[in-house]
Image (cartoon, rainbow, N blue to C red; front, side, top):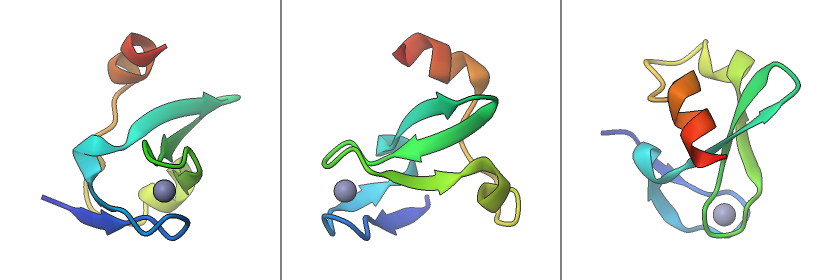
Length: 61
Ligand SMILES: [Zn+2]
């Protein structure tokens, strides 16, 4: 489980708590507390697995 502290509102979050959004063809992670964008997909690719799928994005919309 990846633990994240939002740099904007400092809420402790699990990666699975993050909301997803798309900007153009990029997938972003969005803090559910303050709705700031935390992570763009090209940053995510440098890290370990990111639990974001296109299906989850569409289900959220
Ligand atoms: Zn936040």
